[in-house]
Length: 280
Image 1: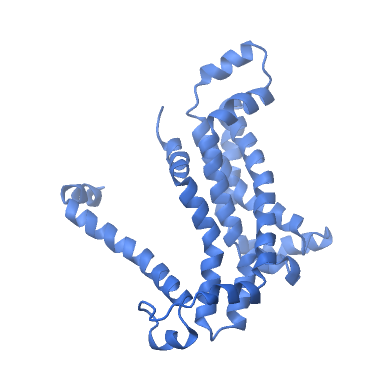
Image 2: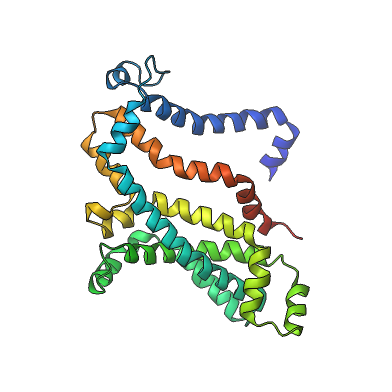
């Protein structure tokens, strides 16, 4: 608190710190973009500077050699499947905890259970989960990975959506109950329409997590025809480890869809992420 109060008195220091942090993020991304359009020979001579010669064919070469059309489709299936399963279930759970308040004792216990789910590292249970999935014949399948991703991302989504729904006016739900609305109608016709910014935010966070997830994808998927983009990028980097131009172009193509989504929905994303911390 003392450090923050001191920074408020010196706005120039504030700007300097923010500028340094911004450069730490922007410079590696800029170098990655530069290297993605350089010829292979130029990267050894000029690894950090602006390209002397633009070679946009790196993108088409990486797209073809890594079979990105199929890989993008595989990741798209995982993202959409996880969103269709995770967001409705998380929204229903958040509605139950925030609006229905079925029990004063149950709600803290459920919150603690979800917090434990967020705290335990995935490496701790990946081996028993692999054995269980093998017994259930869910290894090497989209469904098995979608169930895992849903379980991994649901606790955070529940906390985020619940914090937003706590700000909703309870009078609306009470009036609807008097009119005879059921709990399902309260959720679908009142809670969901009023909470769409946080549902959008949760969807973007879950989609980003699924798109970039590597550990479970490389462990549970071993058929090249259904591998997602994160594992293919790893294999591509190992295959063309001396061609940094192709690797850079491949990395840019991997990040580009999520960047576009964030740019398109950044205003709603920020509203949904911060609204739960503000009182109505």
